[in-house]
Picture 1: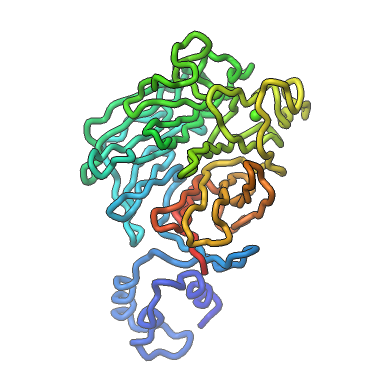
Picture 2: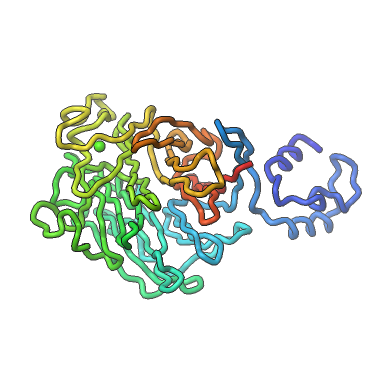
Amino acid sequence: MTYSDRLLFLVIGVGMTLTACGGDTPAAAGELPPAEARAGVAEATPAFPRTVLETGTEYQPIKVVQLAELENPWALAFLPDGGYLVTERGGRLLRVDDEGGLTAISGVPEVAVRNQGGLLDVVLHPDFENNSWVYLTYSLGDRSETTTALARGRLDGSALLDVEVLFEQDRRSEPGRHYGSRLAWMEDGTLLMSIGDRGSEPPRAQDPMDHAGTLLRLTEDGGVPADNPFADGRNALPEIYSTGHRNIQGLVVLPGSGAIWATEHGPRGGDELNLVRPGENYGWPRAGKGRDYRTEEMYGEARSVEGLVDPVYEFLPTLAPSGLAVVSSDRFPRWQGNLLAGGLRPERIARLVIENDDVVHEESLLLQAIGRIRDVREGPDGHIYVLTDEGEGGLYRIEPN
Ligand SMILES: [Ca+2]
């Protein structure tokens, strides 16, 4: 084998048979088999899955398998009959099959693809097997102003049918950033949806009559649950569950306890992990550790302000968090109950050991190994699934090795 052959062999690994190595075709080392044989081999060898990394972590050897190539994927959902639904920020909703094949789903609402905007999160209704509802968040608007929206449609083969917009953030704004957009179902069947502060100056996250900079709690139809903390709308907009968030892009509800964990982007040095409770104010921009990108001055009044909830944990150096999962299966015994927080800028996953609602240990996984981590989810099979936010990004599965 030449060096590049060896590299190819190492990269492809799983899924490659002896036949694919040329075992059927007697050929001296370094010599290519006849063209007919090569063509046959190409057809017989699926492009995916393929092992891209085998590595040790503190307690757990892991293997990373690439399942598909995708362009700036944003979010991932698991279909009950196998396969995956993935959003790409550029506007495509794709079904991904087990061999990396992609099928575009039609009927997706028109999205405003601009800066951080585009097609964003995707989740299935908890009763998807009976009602086929797929929920999507996206940026909605025109060239000048956009907002964060929630829509749903019924998945029928490769089409979304009966598509309806369920919710739109109340104020459109010019900056094309900080859309938030993470969705998570609570155990009572209500839906959490994050809305970023939209990057306006001055920041809008402390205005209770503005959806910007909040976590919302909605009914499955996009309405207001009667037991929302501000349901009467007098002290805050009725959809609001918690306020003072800059831009939540990692969100998970723990099975059993129902605890809501969220990661959010702070400015320089202010990325946070929060344990979210109803009606609370998480401080942005009055409290926090972040500094202004240009002047380096502290934002707000102080790192901690009475009446505003401190983060459970601050990521230092910056994580630029996106995607959050909890390890609940027994696939990774030493990771049970850990949070896995994706990180864009440092290209890593932060594995956080939680005890008594506090972070007692952090380990970096996949540091600069596969790219900017956009989404992290635990699959129904207990493996961990990851999307990378790259032009040549992908869907990956982390397995014990
Ligand atoms: Ca905060």
